[in-house]
Structure formats: C-alpha cells, structure tokens
Image (cartoon, rainbow, N blue to C red; front, side, top):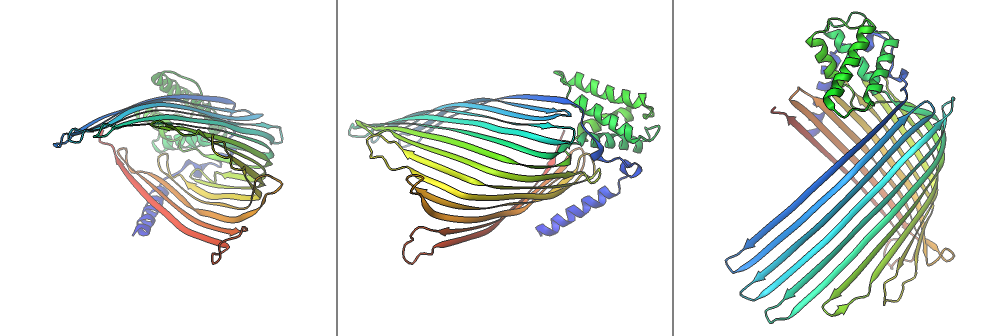
Amino acid sequence: MKNNWLFTFLLSLFLVSSNETSIAQNTDFKLSDYKNPDYVYQKLDLNFDLNNNLTINKASSNSKTWNVSLNSGAGAAYALFKNSEKTQVELNSVLQAGLGSGWHGYSQNASQNDNNSKWLSYIQDFSISGLKRFYNVQQQFFEVNGSIGSFYNGSSNQNKSITSDGQIFENTNRQKLQNYELTLGLLAGSGRIEQVQDARMAMYLLEDLEKLNRISRKASNEDILALSRIITQLKYKRFFDYRLRKIAEITAIDSFLKTNGISGQADATYFTSLNDNWNYANNPERYSGHRIFAGLETSYYFAKYSRNYTYTDTIFPDEINRQKNAGLYLIAGYKYEKPVSLRWQNSASIKAGLGLRQAITTNDSEGIELSPDDFTRGFPSVNLSAEYGFGYYPNSRTWLTLNWWLLSGWDKEKRGTSKDDSEDFQSSFYVFTGPQFHAYYYLSEKLRLSLNANGEFRFDRQKYNYPVLEGNPDKSTISWWNHNIDAALTYSLF
C-alpha cells in the first residue's frame, strides 16, 4: 500500500507540472551559463532558551516528593560566504553554552526517611570550520580547509539520606568531560561549482510575467544573465529593516525590467507576481559545475574524563582517563552538479581515501596500579564514499530529490602496549548503502505536503586475528536492512 501510494503521488506530481508552460522552451538559456558576480554574505543568529520545572507530589501516607529544575542556555551562529573570480570562502562558527541546576527530595513521616539531592551542570560547545579555494584563470585551484571544535561538560551531584534510625549517608560525585578536535586538509584540483538558483529565480520571474500578459517583449539570454546578477547582488546587500529591504528589492527589479523594455502593464497583478517569485522562487539551492581534487587530510582528537567520588567518610581515588586519536589520509575525489534544465538537476560525487589512524588510551587513576597503554592502530585503512541523485523542480514551490549513497571501507587493526610490540588484532570490511528521497509539494497557499523516505543496507564482516575461545568462530558477518517513511500534511488556518 505504501509503495502504491508513493507511486500515485509521484505520477500526479509529474502530470500536474507537465501541463505548465516554460520560458525555457522559448530560449536556449541554461542555468549553467550563469556565473556569480563578486559577493560577500554574512549572517549572525543569536538564540536564548529557558526551561524550568517545579513538581510537588503529596500522598495520603504522608509521603512527599518534589523536583525543581532550572535550565538556561544561549548561543550564537555565524556564517560567512565569499565568492570572487579568484577565491571561494566558506566559514561557519557555532557557540552554545548552558547552565542547569536542580533539587530533588523525598520524605516519609511514617518511617522518618528523608532523602535530599541537588545537582549543578555546565555545558559549553564551540566549533569553527571553513575552507578557502584559490583559483587561477584556468580554473585550477588550491584549497585549504579545516575545523576546530571543543566540548566541555562539568557536573556535580550531592545526595544526603537520613534513615529511620538516625543514620546519615552522604555522597558527592563530581565529573568533567572535555574534548578537542582538529582537522586540516590541503587539496589541489581543477574545476568550479557555483550556486545558480538566482538564475532560476530570474527565469521563473519572467515566465510568470509572460503567463500573466505583463511582459512587452521576450527576454534575451543577456537579459536573463543581467537580471540574475542583480538578484544575487540584492540578496547579499545588508539591511537591518526587513520592510525597507523588501521595498528596495522589488523597486530594483521593477527598475531593471522597465529600463530594458521588458515589463508591460505595471499594476497590482504585476507587482504581486514580482513579490511572489522573490519570496518563493529562490529555494532550494541549485548548483552547476564540476570539481576534481586530490590531497591530504589529517585529524587529531583528544578527550579527557575525570571523576571524583566520596561516600560518607570514604574518599575514592580520582579517576582520570585520556584518549588520543590521530589520522592521516591521502584522498582523491570528484564532484559533479548539472542543472539539466530549469526543472531537472543531476548530481554525483565520489571520494576515496587511503591512510592510517592510531589511538592511545591511558588510565591515570590515583591509588590504582596503572594499566599499560592500549595502543590501537588501523593500518592500512581504505574508504570509499559515493552518491548519485537527481532533483525535480516543477515550479517555484514544489520539488523532489532522490539520491543513492554508498560508504564502504576496509580496516586492519593492531593492538599492543607500544608501536614496537603491536600485533594484528582484527580486520573488518563494511558497506553501508541505500536511497534517500525527499519531496515538498505545495498544494495551495494553505496546504502543503512533505514526504521523506530513507533506506539503509548494512554489511559488516570482521575477521579476528587474536586467539578465540575454542568452539567460537574466528570471523563474523552482520547484515541488515532498515528503512523509514514519514509524511506530513500542513494546513495553515490563517
């Protein structure tokens, strides 16, 4: 039934959209013809949250339970995109922090049992990632990319219990978790991929004016390119007043159409069409171009966990665990984006890596005999990822995408107390693959339908090189299939 329903939905979508006329039928303009002008786009979002709770339960047996929690958080997200003939720059940074505290209590008068506890926690998460590509006139490039991330979580819990005979038990638990991650990539390649949804908006805008008989002449390819560049420049122009921004944007588009003799009767229908396309015809993003690359990627990860625990008069040794991971890979890949037409998109990518990784875990608990370092190395490590898909965009509000993805690899793992005495431990081969489908169908201004369907096949085979217990296999194979489908129908009352 689900498959029949999905097929019926897709067929209906195709039939409805196929009846529409298109300006693409009257011009040889292609989205891939559009090249973005220089622009710089910045965005900063701030968020604040507050979550508090108070619960008191009192039973007829004279028992009482209460819970109080106070939680607050704040964060900021910054994004920068820069495009020019010689460079492409992307930068994203996120900072989140939160503080929480709470109290919990229980008392029962009949047995004179009392239990009180309180806790306090603090979380901080920071990450920054970015890349910069340097291009020459032959569209060859050198890329530097990287990321830095840190996470901290500290908490303390205190609990006090009084039994019916007057005994008092107290315990305190304090723990901290902090980790840091660093990645760096150096790539060289050829080709360039750029966003072209602004050209898509220009074509839809002109198409709708033609349908409404509000156009005085056909737009040429040069007109579409010029209008697309104006749209890009307007999008990335900074305004702090949304109302003034919209006035400036629609005025600039109207001025271009009038100056070039394209617009017809400028009435309410004309301006409503401009406003409608400006609001809706720019999503989702469309891309054009290809890029082939090769280079090095390296990563480093460090985590530290510490715990201090006391119970009544007993103080337990501090527990400290550290983990270090490092990896170095030689990679190569290819990415392809083709806007086949105004309404169809084709995408493909493949990336392969060969390298090694290693991890060292240490236990520095006080008062406990130190365990030897558990040295683990995966060498060699080979991985392959790929994706192929297409998108269908019948109008400015409706689209669907279908992709098939693949992740596969082979790892050989060694273990020992040092690099010199590490021995083969196990090897593994894995394959993850499946389809991903997404559809957004604009039925009317008030009614919209969205559909997501994902499938995943997993295959994992491991061979154990260490001595296994007698009667147990020296290899294992696991395979399974998982899929989910969810749909949502949204109706806006007003």
